[in-house]
Length: 207
Image (cartoon, rainbow, N blue to C red; front, side, top):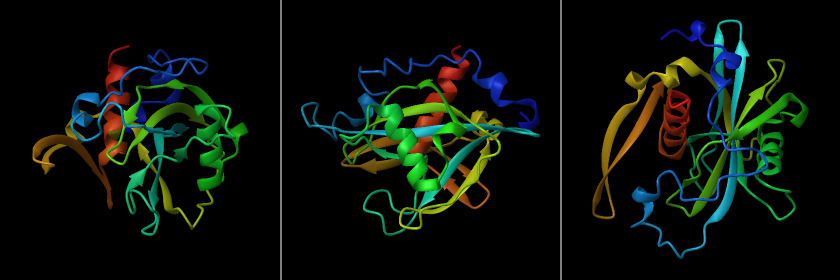
């Protein structure tokens, strides 16, 4: 699959997304994997991230960031722009847009929110709502050095190709767990970010 064969408009048209005004409230996509790590009654901290798709001359790309080594959670990992939903946010869309502006300085008027994919829960106790959006190609990035070490784009075609999703297993709390990771240039994309990308691919294929 070549990046040049996939444009943002072509890929995102028809994808099955939860509406912006009705975010998914059901079980997390990875509920079965997390049930023995986080008890069902344990309060999850609500968060939102932005899966930003930008159309370039040679195809569609996904915006990702690498967190600094001194943040309190998921230090050094590749992630989407995003973070906790604050009381001042009107909802997950507002939170994702605010966090994107704070972390990489992309203004809301350069982002077209489209809808949500399934929620994802992390072992650190966050319940994440991933917001899929189109990014204006004219955007520029100014990483917040307190949180973001760098921002970069990955061809969407690379992430949609199942052959690039390396299947791994790890023992966590006495149970072998399956996970996926992507290697793109010098970047290792794994954990919650890779899992949400797999969910994105599944929803796209399921259209």
